[in-house]
Length: 157
Image (cartoon, rainbow, N blue to C red):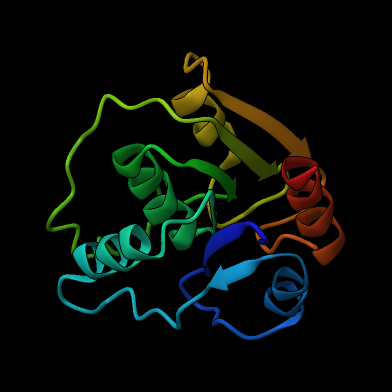
């Protein structure tokens, strides 16, 4: 039986592409096409992920913001690429968010040259959280496929 992964794409992205295709070769994947402006989107995604019961949630940018909160609520490990923990272009409907004391293992990958989500601010937000591990790379906002694959493989092995 393969590992189950929930993958939440970014705001201006979708659920098709090389990263999604590769994930499907190594895991059973829940990777919906997400309209982050949809009413009750947080509750919808949290409910669907809870039903799917993944061992890992991966999120990119706005998907990383959602994955961060869902992972904490459901106590699931997470891998977040340039998560939009701040500097969002709009505030999505987070109805249903419960601020949890759960402290799952969270790995955050930050592109030091990200000009969308300020990397230094992300680092400040997470620096005193013991269960969050930070890795920086030299990329911009869009995470290169090789970095995505390398960091995901580290958690799968």
